Image (cartoon, rainbow, N blue to C red; front, side, top):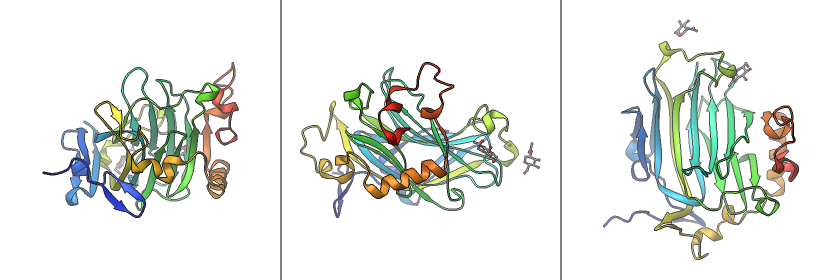
Amino acid sequence: MIPIAIIILSGMKLVLATNFNRDFDILWGNGRGNIHNNGKLLSLSLDEYSGSGIVSKNAYLYSRIDMQIKLISGNSAGTVAAFYVGSHGDYRNEIDVEFLGNLTGDPYTIHTNIYTKGNGGREQQIRLWYDPTSSFHTYTISWSPFMIAIYVDGTPIRVFKNLESSGVPYMTDLPMKVYTSLWNADQWATRGGAIKTNWTEAPFKVWLRNYKARGCVWKNGGSSCSYGTSQIVNQDWYKQRELDWSSKEMLKWVRHNHMIYDYCRDSSRFPYGLPHECYLDTLLT
Ligand SMILES: *[C@@H]1O[C@H](CO)[C@@H](O)[C@H](O)[C@H]1NC(C)=O
Ligand SMILES: *[C@@H]1O[C@H](CO)[C@@H](O)[C@H](O)[C@H]1NC(C)=O
């Protein structure tokens, strides 16, 4: 019998899922999403007719997901590649990491958003300090009971704390699956939609590898961590309540030097006051 989740203990890192074949289903794209090397590598492709995407078999209620991604080189204008975790329904939660393409030589933008209980509108954008198309880089979504953190090669680019006690909704109820996809968004993605996808250069391709999921798997209507018995709850990412000092310094560096948009600074968009969380924590503003 083959166990549903193979638990690999490597030091203190409890990794539950690592393989595109075993741990994902192709969600859409009619042959444009392809798994290679026995599940170690994935390519997503986009042409004039369709993009493609995959979804994890497991849903998690708290997880830390690592994915290495190599984005489209050359002209990627109009395209969006996405790596996100999300649930379903009117009160859905979602943590989005989207890569907005650009013309050859112009920089990619990382666009992040956080939906809690059906409401998003928490966009931030940064420019990377390296070329994300020339090699693989590691993108991490960490979601614990206390905070969400998004990392690029271990450098935090965004934090969203559980501020439920101050009236800001957090994601504590619904399990989320992991998604990656590539699609055409030339109505808005590049320079606000001014630059269209150039289909003579299709198919566009994104490569993904070294998928690692740690997390509390959702089974029979409950989280495997809910009774505190899982080894997951002893992991650093799960217990983390704030970034350590050096990570905070790195996040400040990113925000100071590489951030190009933050909803918490966009007072013209919120004439009646910024969203509540923008006033609560200095790392959010
Ligand atoms: C693409 O490059 C242009 C020029 O550098 C820049 O203004 C724009 O923000 C970049 N990204 C997107 C997604 O449009
Ligand atoms: C689209 O790409 C082709 C091939 O690289 C190029 O010849 C053409 O000028 C491009 N079209 C636009 C509108 O930039």
